Structure formats: C-alpha cells, structure tokens
Image 1: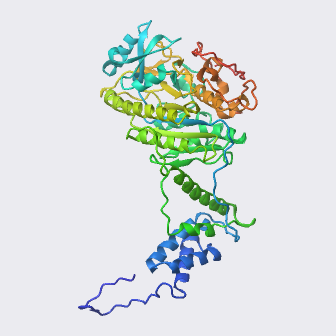
Image 2: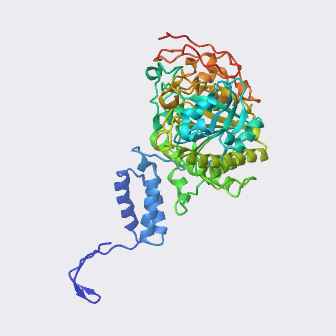
Image 3: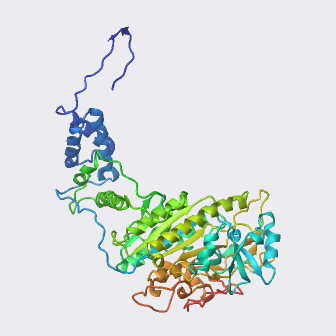
Length: 562
C-alpha cells in the first residue's frame, strides 16, 4: 500500500495521489505480480509452466495479500530459486515416496550417545578394591571432589589393577545392567592418532587436544588424518552395509551430526527428527501444488535443479510417511520427562517402525549436554547422571518389551574426560582419556575392557599434569567391534576405521569378546590394512597397553619407529 501523510478535514484529504491498484483476480494483476517476483527471486529464470501454476494459485486466493503470500511460498520451493539452472520440465509427475520392502534380514540398531562437554568419567567409574592402593591415590589426587568409598556402587573387574571398581552412586541401573551381563565398560579410552605416551604425545597426535570442537569432531569421525574427508564413523558403516544390499535408516535427534555422514551417493542422507518425533510441515496452502512444480525434467535440464526437485519432494514425502507412522505410537514403558528420556523414547518409537520402513540396519545419533563441569562438578554430575540412569533403564526395559534387546547396541562417548585434580571452584577441567560404557542384549557385559590406569599421579607413564590421562585404548577398538556385530567383514574394516592399521594387536579388542551374537559377513578374511599415502610414521610406546580380551590377529604394515 502507498501510505502518505496529508492534511485534511475529517475523512477528506487533499494533496494525496494514490495510484489505483487492480483488484486480485482481474486479468493482468496476478501475472504482473508473479513476473516481478520471478525477476526478484529467480532473476527471471522461473519457467512459464511454473508461472502458470503460481498465477492460478494467486487467483484462487481469498485476497491479494493471501495471493502474494502463496505465490512467494511456491516460488521459494522451486529449483529456479535454489539453483542457477534453467529447468525443462515434462508433464510427468515424480514417483511417490515409499519405504523399501522388508528383506527379512536380522535387524540391527546402533545408538551413539555423546555426553556433550566432557564427562568426568573417573567419578563415573572410580577405583574401589585395588591391590596397589589406587583408591587412596584417587582420594589424594581428586581431593574434595573424590567420592567416599561407602557411597560408590562396587562392580567386579577382572584382569585390572582393581578387582572391583566403583560406579557413581547415582547409577544403580548401570550396576544392574552390568551385573546382568548387559553392559560393559571401556577403560581409559579416547581419541588417538597412534599409540603414544606422555613423552611423545604432543608431537605424534594429529588432533588438537583438550578443545571441545576438535575432540568432539574426532570422536564422531574417528579419522584423525582425514583419510575419508567429511565422513563419520556410523556413516562409513552405513556405506559398507548399503553396498551389500541392506536398507539403512539413519536418524539424528535435534541436530546435524557428522557421525552419520557417509560418502556422497553411497547411502541415504540421515534424517533429523526432534526429541518428540517428526515435526509437522505446515504448508497446507501450497503442498498440493509441489508435485506439479517439480515434475520430472528432460535430459537436457540442469542437473542441480533436478537434484533439488528430487530431494525436496523426497524430503517432504519421507517426512509425511514417517510422521504418519509415528503418530499415535506410544512406548510400553514410561520414560522420564527429561531431554534424554524424551529422545530415547523417540528412538524407541522409530525402532518400532522398522518393519514398515523395511529397515535392516538403523543408526541413531543422540546427544545430551551440561557436562562441561568447570565448577561444582560433583553436584552437577550427580544431577546429570541421575537423569541418564533413569533414561537408560527405561530404554533397556522398552527394548526388552519390544523383543529387540538383542538387536540394539547403545554406545556412550564424550569429548574427553576431565582432570582428576580439581580446580579452585570445586570443578574439573578438560582432559583426555576416559571411561565409557556400551550396553545391549548382545553385549557381553559384566567386564572391563581396555586397561584402567594403574598410576594416576603425575609420575604415571600415561598421566599428564593435573591427572590428564593419555588414552591406552583408541576409539577404533569399540567401533570396529560394533562394525563386526553389524556384519561388516574384515575386508571392509579399513574403510570403516581408516586409522586402524596404526595400532597393533594389543590395542584391538576381538568382536567375540564384546558380543555374543555377530552377523556373519559375506566373506571373512584376515584383516589387512594399507596405510594412506600421506601416513605419518607409526610410533609404538615401549610398553603397549594390554587389553583385557583375546585380541584378534591383525596384519599391519610396519612403519619406522621414531
């Protein structure tokens, strides 16, 4: 509208010149508006076919304001708006989005949980009954943030420095799962470029240590030399499984995560849902016209515009399909009303749709925050672990009620552990190696894999200043085991974990030690890894950290020792 200020008496104004607008629906008005929008929004590339559809919708609107809004919405969906290609459409609609048919293969699901901020995992899993006085060292080093032994929940630990370790008092469900054989722990695990100790870690580590962004990214990628750039650990697993003919579902809750990203074109892109499920797309005024605006294109039409139209309709269709499947689905177990509880409830509901979706393997990325405890660590950690405890318990009960407990594995990670020695604010700061858990019906629980530190003082071989532990188990160890559990064979393991060849057999944990049920791969051969062309030299520490397991044989390519 042309609004002008002018003087006048009562309802009569003088000196105002307002051009008369043609009312909506009158010949020529909608054409002119859509032409101008095409110029402004697509540099005039909007095709005549698209213009005709948008003009019809403008004319059918109840007012010129509604017509303008609908025209803008429709143009913003077009490939001409999103690309610089010229579009040449046919009169044939695209195929409707459908889920693939079930293949009746054994179902598997992996849930990757990141505790954002750096979990203080040496209070999550502390020394308890130790032959070398490690609990007393724990009290000395941790000072006021140490947990008294009478509050810890003891669990057995064979082949470790301690015959018993102590779980945080807010984790009784963890103790039950561990004692029942459904949960295990990986001790002193973390991001490693290659085996190192306190004398050489600084020059032989390719990841920037102690920084949230770098450590989180590498924990999700597990590719420190960027051999498979832009991909994540679960995404590379999905690529291999998709090539073997499996239908893959990939979901991230509330955020993008590189953990789920594979190579372009290998497997489908992950879908982002929110903690309550699949959000509704509010496009009721326009979505019925999407199919006409995005008909199939001719062979000489632009590839970028074709890709946009195909992806756009696929996204809208998948959203509607999945939302309709989740609508009305409830869990059999009451989940806690906290963020992780809501998130794991949604994961459970998605798993319940596995047969409708025709999924053989599902991968899930889940994250919950608050673990950057630079102050009041024990107060904050107690609150956070209490919420995780009840959420994990509900998730385990739900999987059992759905009869898929043996088909689901949840692994927990974090940026890093925290300094054993506290700061002046009763908090702890960024560190490195930490303790992590994995649970599921196929997990061989009740055991501690890797090596719990024997010396946590600054004199220890793997202890940096203020109780920062150098990891003795790389992330490759648990994730290669998970890959084997999913049915990925030895010949593809170097694609899943491209840095695995840097670690000798003492760092690799046999999948059979971690799991009771492993899907046989199509072929099984000895693991042979070829280093990347730009590989840095492998330096093995003088005393490799033994793993509490029967290691799988690994044929590695030797490299010079510095």
